[in-house]
Image 1 (spheres, rainbow, N blue to C red):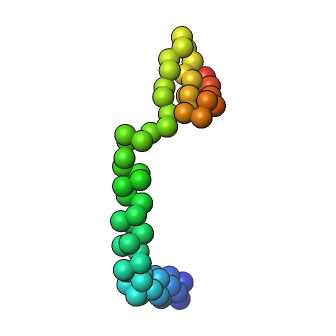
Image 2 (cartoon, helix red, strand yellow):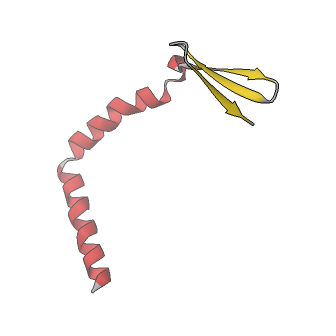
Length: 66
């Protein structure tokens, strides 16, 4: 019974995805360029002895202990 419930839930979710496939594809088309554009990275990594310091363009810093 449990397996049948999981299968049914999966099929319902899959069918909903297929119905909305244009919207899903459009969402991926929008987000992939943002995630893969490394030219616009805000972080600059600066090494300082055994510590790393992430400096953001807005001036904030995030120290990381190694």
